[in-house]
Image 1: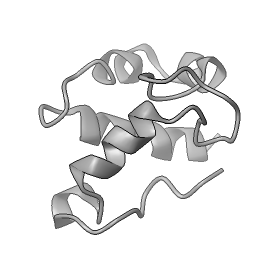
Image 2: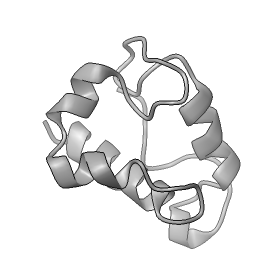
Image 3: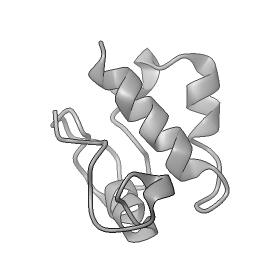
Image 4: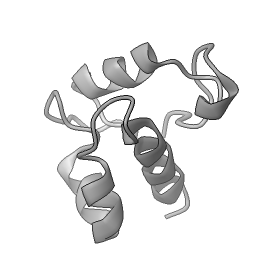
Amino acid sequence: MRDAVNGRRGNAGQRGKDQRWYMEQYKSDECLCGRPKARRYAFCFRCYASLPRDMQRALWRRFGQGYEEAYDAAAVYLGSL
C-alpha cells in the first residue's frame, strides 16, 4: 500500500499534502492498495466497500469542503485493516 498519510508539500492541516495531490489521486486509475480503480473515485471498489458507511459518505464531499480530511481518514482506516 502506498503512503497515504505523507505526500507533497502543503499546509500542516493536510499533513504535508496540497489540494493538487488529492486531485491527482482522484484522477488516478490506481488505488492506494495498488489495484485498478475507476478515475474520479477515491478508492477501488473493494477498499471503498470495506469502509464504514459514514466514511463512504464523507468521500462524496467537495474538494476544499471536507474531501481531503475524509480521504485521509479513510486511508488511515484502510491501512489498519
